[in-house]
Every structure is written in structure tokens, then in C-alpha cells.
Length: 343
Image 1 (cartoon, one colour):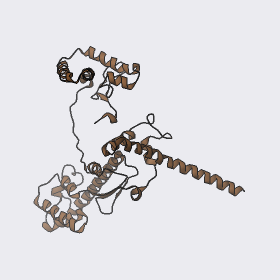
Image 2 (spheres, helix red, strand yellow):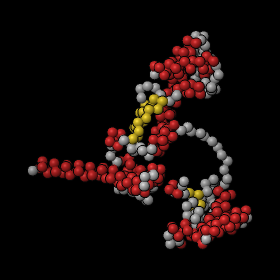
Image 3 (cartoon, rainbow, N blue to C red):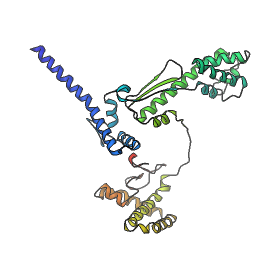
Image 4 (cartoon, helix red, strand yellow):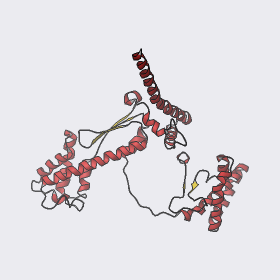
């Protein structure tokens, strides 16, 4: 009898644990089902709906204390066989890495060796760096790699007296570091993409990365995400206080335009002309700040968000970056909007 009771307790415990684990799959399935109903066959709308749900906090949406994004990580892993998806193999271009490490050296022997290594790599699928080293020695046995890779960036690792073997060892480490960086960047992009339980692995062939993405239904979006290149740029921006007055004017103009559009469609052109004239006339800064204060405090007084948005078409979507007194906060941030309200 004692053993029977223990078995019952164990069975009930296992059943409860199973139900708990499966409940996350049920919760995410419901959200995805709602997304399909909302999109009505439009894949972009469906993806946008799910992406917006992934950004919600626990206060906005939660299931057993978990956000939707956390539920996606805990749902049942069906894999590619049951769920479908994409299976992608990417290869890091070691040739481009070597060109960058040489600061794009125009040396004929160097570029000819790269060309030969590329052709042999397509035929044999061997290690590109080894093929390059062999081709370089074949073209000119007396040529020295130190003269090509002795750049400012590698001056602490390669000097004029470094042999070709020493340079190849340094290049191997640099190539491995570049491949690992590419691997980490891809992992970060995939995590940001929101795919549940992805698999990303470095294959035995140097520079090749296997990516499995269960449940992906937009191959083009995945290709753009994985193949995109990063570009770091610096832009001079305006201060929030310099533009916030124009936001207040835009809010008033939108309210005026929408009010006139409801009265008569024929008056739209005339209202647009008045709006343009209004933009050219900038009132005093203090008056504009008072307007911002008035509009931001009106949220609490409005009976609903719809009423506030009707009175403030712009501020109902874009919340100005101001303090509790309505004064603009420092910096280039002018406001915040929900992801679902963006194009």
C-alpha cells in the first residue's frame, strides 16, 4: 500500500509538471492564433503582431509571471522535422579577412595567391589559409608575408624579421577571432529576431556555421537579417528643447486638420494651406512649453486614451520626452512611441 501511494504521488507530480510545461506552448499558440486572425493572411502584419507582443512587459502581458518572449523560450521544442523552418549554412569569407588584415595591400604576388587559393577552395573545400600559404610560396618562394601583413594594427605581432611560418600562425589566430566574432554576431541577431529555440553551430570546416531556425515562415527576412552588414556612423543631432516646440505645433495642426476633415472633405486643401502658414510663425518658447505641459497632463484628465488621442493626434502616439513639469529633458531623444504605432 505504501508503494502504491508513492507511485500515485509520483504520477500526479509528473502530470502536474507536464501540464505546467505544456501550458507555455498553449499560451504562445493562442497568441500566434490571434496574430493569424488579425493579419488575415498578411504575413507582414502577422510578424509585426508577434514582434510587438515580444516587446511587452509583465505589466502589459504575462502568463504565470512570464512575458510572451519568456514563454516562447519555454514552449515545447518541436524542431525542424515537426515544426518546419529554415536550415542555413553560412561561410565566413577568409579571403576578405586576409585582405582586411593586409590593409588591402595591392601586392601582385599577394593578390595572385588569393585568387589561386579561391579557385582551389572551390574544388577541394580545404582550409583557405593553408591553400593561400601554399599558393604564395609557389608564386614566389622568396616573397615574405611580413612585408604584406606588417601593418600598424599587427605591429606587436608581426615585424620585419618574422618568417612566413610565424606570420601564418598569427593569421590563424586572427582568422579564428574573426570567425568567432561573426558567430557571436549571428547569435545576437537570431536572438533579437525572436525565433524560438534556434540552433547555431560551428562546423568542422573552418568558417562554416550551421543555423537551424524552427518555425520561420519568412525566408527573405531571415536572409536579410543574416547577410546584413553593420555600418557605424556618427550624426550630429538637435537637442530635444530645440524641436519640442515644433512638436506642439504639429500636434495642434493635426488636431485642426482632422477636425476640418470631419466637417467637410472639400476644406482639406484650405486647411493644409493654413497649416503651412502656421508652421512658419513660431510662438514664444514659454508658450510652447506651457502647451506641452497642458497636453501631457491632460492624459490623466481624459476619460479614455481614445479621447486623449482624438484631442492630441500626435501626442496620443508619440509621448514627448519631458519631465513631470512638462519641461524638455536634455538629449536628442524627442519622444517615445509603441512599436505597434510605427510604420
